[in-house]
Image 1 (cartoon, rainbow over the protein chains, first blue to last red):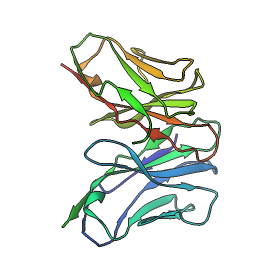
Image 2: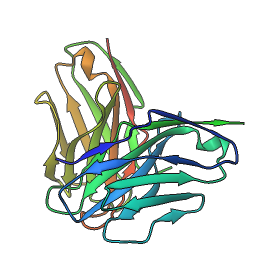
Image 3: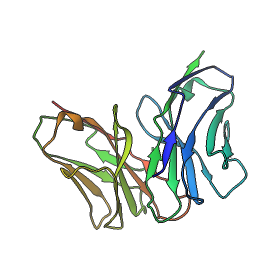
Image 4: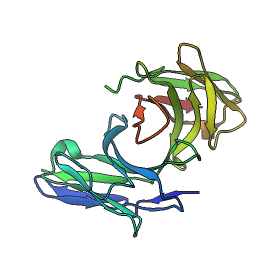
Length: 116
Length: 114
């Protein structure tokens, strides 16, 4: 079974600075997808960014980018120019690309605080 | 707004009772997923339906059941409720099965069992 590990329960960043959230995963599959979801205090789960494992190029969405290291099974999220609205729980998630289903397997989350 | 709706937003009930949570997927989405978020278990996949058929099961208790109706809305039924069932229950939907198809989450139903 696939597992997702987020080793940083809490992180803090100064407004306008850059922060990197770590995620590692364990899988024997070669075809899969990785996601970062944000959960603000409203509890809504919001997709931040996604990465296909077969793509070497790291995904980027505005101020959010990932560092995908397939061999190391690492998928970190970099937030540039942090804003107060970025304060939230961030979950890393794995989805199989094969026949084992389409479910998301989540990490335990990292709570990000943004200092003004 | 993800386009996925869930009702009710909050539910407070007693142990031993039965409740039904409802989810309407985004327009056109065929796949519905149910997830449970609790303090001790984190975010866990419960069950998935695709176009009315059960597609995959996760750590769903036998006291829990779900179905997807012809209009594609889904219901999650929780029975013989226990204190430990208190959690946030999310529904998510996606268009299809293959590829990097994104799951869009509803706002969740907060269940409190007293």
